[in-house]
Length: 126
Image: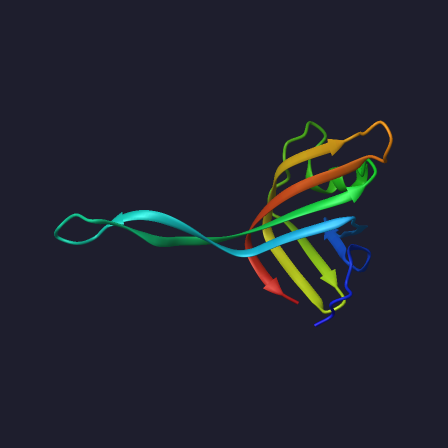
């Protein structure tokens, strides 16, 4: 385990382009739960309904190239994009990914930051 890995060591790849990042938060393998009824007493219980994977990417600057990799010109999210995170000890490749939110912070004293949340249906360790 590399305990010294920092955001500068991590790369984010979307639409075949590589982007330097300020921060990447990954949550691969989040279990989605659903209420279910399956016994004669009609008792409810919670059952796994699927698995989802989320990635939040923060980059310095307005990141127009990253916006173009994830969104159309009229800000509709591109579907089925492939993204990959890569650090010093490997990474994760996400497929069938779709951006779910986009935000840009333009503070008066510090530099601009862009953050994009992405949800993917599949994740593979690389």
